[in-house]
Amino acid sequence: MSSATLTNNQPTTVIQQKLVGVFLVVGLLMRCSRYLMNFPLWEDECFLAVNFIDRGYLELLEPLRYHQVAPVLFLWIELTTVKLFGFHEFALRAFPFLCSIVGLFLFLHLAKRLLSGSALVLAVGIFAVSYPNMRYAAEAKQYASDMLAGLIYLTMCVEWWRAFSSTDTAKTHCASRWLWALVVFTPVAVGLSYSAVFSAGAVSLFVLMTIISRVSTNRDPAVSLLSSLFSHRQLRLWTVYNIALLGSFAVVLLIAAQGQASAELDWMGRYWSNAFPPLGTPAELPLWLLETHCGPLLAFPLGGHNFASTFTTICVLIGVIALARRNRILAVLLLMPATLHLIAAALQRYPYGGHFKFSMHMAGVICLLAGFGAVLLLDAIGKLTRTQRYTLAVATAYLLLVGSGTVIRDIRSPYKTESDMRARAFAQWFWFSTSFQGESLCVENDLGIILTPKAQTELSWTAMYWANKAIYSSQTVNHLDDLKVTHKRPLRCVIYRDPKFKFDQSAFEDWMSEMTSRWELVSTEKYPFPRFAKYQSHADRDDARAVDYAEIYKFVPKSAKNEVEFSEDDESPAKRR
Image (cartoon, rainbow, N blue to C red):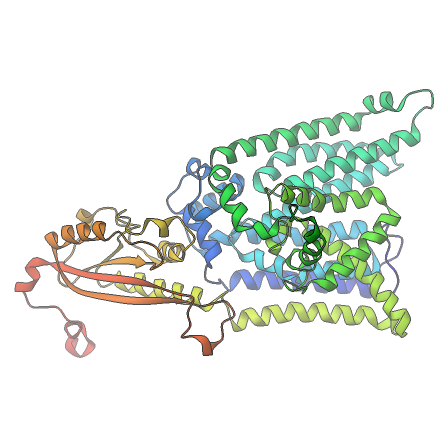
C-alpha cells in the first residue's frame, strides 16, 4: 500500500475510485435503511420530543422539560417540521436525516481535497460506515447537525485555504468570497449547534496563522509586518468574521442564560462529571485522557468504553504526527476543535468524552485522521509481513463488514431496546383501538391534572408514554364537557404511574370524586411497563430495572345502570348474523 499524502500528489487509481463509490453507496443505504425502519422513539429522543407537542417558538426559549438542552435554531427547525408534517417519528427525524445525507457527500468532497489514494478510500469508508454517523441519521436529537456544522466549517475553510494559497489571481479573489461565506454561515452554525463554536474558533486561528505566514513571506522588507497585516484585505475580512462569531456566540449565551443554561447547568455538570478532566487530582489526568480517547470519544467506525476505541486512537495519533510534520498550519485547523472542546470541558461547560455524541462535531476530522493514519500503519505492517498488496483489501473488507453487520443488526432488531418497542406497541394498540370503542384521554396530559409532578420534569419513561400518545392518539380532549359518553361508548381515563416518584393521592381523590359525580366507574385495569437494561438477556426478564404502570379507569353514564348493559357479545359477528 502506498503511503498517503495531504497534497493530492498521489494519484487515485480507478480501483480506488470505485471503492470510494462503493462506500458512498453503502453509506447512503445505511442511513436510509435506519431512517425508513422507523425505530420506536427511545427515551433520549422522547425527552426532547415532548417539548414540541404543546410549545410555540418563543416557549422553546424557556427551560425545556426533562433537563434537555438544545440549540434554539435546531429546536425551531424541529418544531417547524412537526407543524408542517405532523408529530411522528419520520417528521421528528427528518432534519437529522437530511443533515446526515448532506454530511456524507460533503465529507467526500472534503476528503478529496486533502487525501488521495488508499487514504481517501479508508477515510471515506470509515465515515460512511461509522455507527455514530449512521445512528444519528435517524435520531431526533441535535448531533447530526453538530456533525454537519463542523464539516461545513472545515470544508469552507479548506476551500478558502486553497484559493488563498493559489498563485492564480482568479482563484485568489475567490478567497474573499469564502471568508464572506464563513461570516454569513457563522450565526446559523452557532444557532444550530453549540459545539460549532469549537470549529469556528479553529477556523479563526487557522485563517489568522495562514495570513501571517503569507504576509511575512511576501512583504516588502521596508514595510513592517504589522503595517502589512493591517493593510491586508483578508485580515479585514477575518476581523469581520470574528465580530460575527463573537456576536452570535453572545446572543446564544444570552438566550441560554435566560432559559436552558440557568436551569440545567448545575444539573448537567453533575450528570456528566466523569466527562470533565479531573483537574483537582492532576495525578489522575493522564489515565483520564487515555481512557477518554480510547473510549467513546473516538468510536469511529466502532468503539466504546473499556478501551474499545484503542485501534482508532492509534490511527488518529499516527495521522496527527504525520500531519504535524508535513503541514503544521493544517494540523492547527484539524486539532484545534478538540483543543477548544477540552478547554470547555476543563471549565465544566461541555462534556469531553463519556459518549460519542459529544464528539460528533469532530466526526469529519476524526475520520480524516483515522483514514490517513490507518494507511500509514497498514503500510508499515504490510512491509514487515510482506503482505503490502493485501492490506487495503483487508481494511476495505473490514469496513464493509462493519456496515453490513450494522444493517443486519437493525433488520433483526429494529429498535434500540425492547422496552421502547413495547411502549410504542401499547400506544398503537390502545389509543387506536379505543377510539373506535368510546372516548379516551390521559388525565395528566389532556386534562392537566398533574398527579406525579416529578415524573413530568425529571428523567423518566413518562416522556416515552407521552410522546407515543401524541403520535398514535387521534383524539384531542381539552375538557370533560366536550365528551359524548354513552354506555356503548364509555370513557377510558389513563394515568401513567412511575412508582419512584411521589403520587399526589389527594389530587387523585379530588379528580375521582368529580368523575364519579358525573359518571359511574365500572372497571379498573392496570398494565405493567417493565423496563430492562439494553443488553439484558432473555433469562433476566424477571429482573427488571423498573416497572411503571398504566392505570385505566372506565366510566359510563350513571343512567346506564338502568338500561341493558353493553357487552362484547352485542357486537360480535355471531350476534350480527
